[in-house]
Length: 94
Image 1 (cartoon, helix red, strand yellow):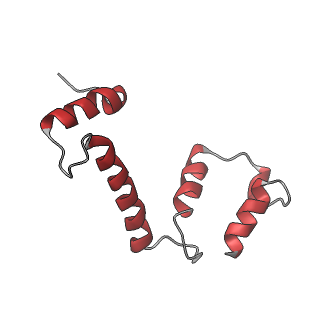
Image 2 (cartoon, rainbow, N blue to C red):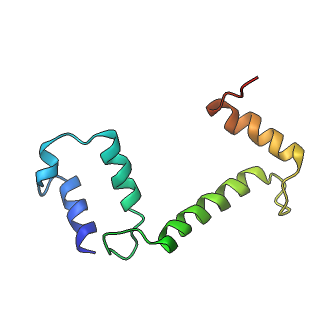
């Protein structure tokens, strides 16, 4: 709880920290985002906290693919999902 409050106060500009003197690198931002998974403020991400994030993303992705909401993704549903959502980020090697 303390770390989250400090992070919020720093982000709002209410406090400064030694780390805020230097600009955040891309890696710093990725690490900061990862550490936001620390739901119990232990200053570390447990396997269960990480798993919760993975399951949330998995459920969201599955809902996007299962167009008719029947609990199964058919080849046609996946093809449509791929063509409309994912193909833009990947280049298949031919």
